[in-house]
Structures are given as structure tokens and as C-alpha cells.
Length: 131
Image (cartoon, rainbow, N blue to C red; front, side, top):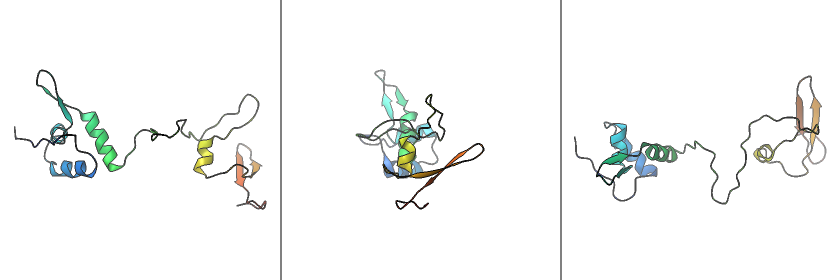
């Protein structure tokens, strides 16, 4: 086995991680993870490579977000599914995920057009004209 350069201190992250992985292109994925510091040593002295942390760090470095985790101070909630159901009182509720995505504000008005099997909402300007 070839001698590997261990990362000093914490595992590599960000651009430093991406650059190091490119340098190590000839190694296996486990060897890359180990060389970037994504391993632990057990009490028995056995090295265990943490591939999940390595992959998550790579995704983060590339700007790929796999989950919808909120930033500290942010609010949780459901993500938009682009489907709604008629409520027991007959109302249709359009959630805040959609209104935020469209930058709608309280008081914004819409014209409702009923089709055979659809409902179309057309946003109105403040003066009553269609947008």
C-alpha cells in the first residue's frame, strides 16, 4: 500500500476538499475519503472510513443540497407539493410556500376563472387591471 498524506486536524471541506479529491483521482473512493480526513481510529487501532460524511462534504462543497434543512433561526414547515385538497368546509387553501415563492403580499388580488376541470388564478394589478 502506498503511503497516504493524512489531513491535519479537521477533515477537509469546501474548495480545499474538491481540489484534494481531484489530486487523488487515481485512488479508490475509500482512499480518497481517508486522505481527506474522513476516518476514525477505533480503540483497537482499526481505521474506519466515514463515507457518508465524506459524500455529504462533497455535496456541500459542490453546492448540492439534498435535504430541505433550515438554517439556524429559520422556520420549518412543509415543502410545496403543488397539490392541494378541498377542505371539509369546501375551501381551497393555497399555502404560504406558494405565496412566498411568488412574492405575494397580503391584499394581493386575483381573478378566478373556472374551467371544466381546473381553476385559474390571474393576479390583478393594484388598480384592478390584470398583470
